[in-house]
Image: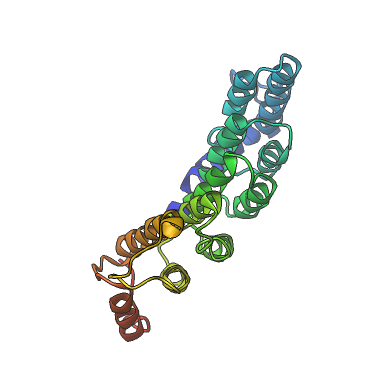
Length: 254
C-alpha cells in the first residue's frame, strides 16, 4: 500500500473531480455546468507552457511546465508524456532530471520501464544517473531485476568512471528496494566487484591506482547497501558470503 499511496491519492482526487463532472456539477458546484476533465486540463496546461519554453529556448520554463503533473504522474497518459520528455534527444539534462524525479515519486510500477528506457536513451548525459536513482523510488519488486541488469555490466568496469558512477547509483537504488531479491542481487554484484581484487598487502602500480580507487568506492557502495537492507555489519566479502550462505533461506527483512 505504501508503494502506491502518492499515485492513488492523485487518482482519487481526479476520480472525485471526474465524478462531479459526470453529474454535471461545475467547479463551483453549479448544477448543469460540467467541470473540466482535470487530466485533460493538466495536459493542456503542460502542452501550452512546455511549448512556450521550447519557442523561447528556455529550459527553466520547460522544467517548470512539468510541475503541473506533481502528484498525478502515475496516471498513464501523463506518465507517457513525461516519458517522452525524458527520451527526447534534444532536451536538456536539467529538464530530464526534473522529469525523472516526477516519475520516481509517482508510485506507478509502469514507470520502471519508462525510466529504464529513458536511462538507455540518456546514458551519455547527466540525467542517466537520475533515471537509475529514481527507479529505486518506485519500491516495487520488479525494479530489482531492472536495476541488477543496469548494474551488473558496469560494476567492474573500473577504467570507466561514468560506468562505475551509474553502477553505484543503481546499487544505492537497490538498497531502497526492501526485498530478499535485492540482497541476492547485491551479493552477485559484490562477487563481480571483488573478482580479481589485489591482495590487501599488494603494491598497486601507479597506472592501476585510479582503477582500484573506483573498485574501492563501488565495493563500499555494495557494503553500505547490504548493511542498509540487512542490518548486518560483516567486515569482508568472505564474511558476507558465509553469512548469506547460512541465512538466505530463512532471513527476513524487517
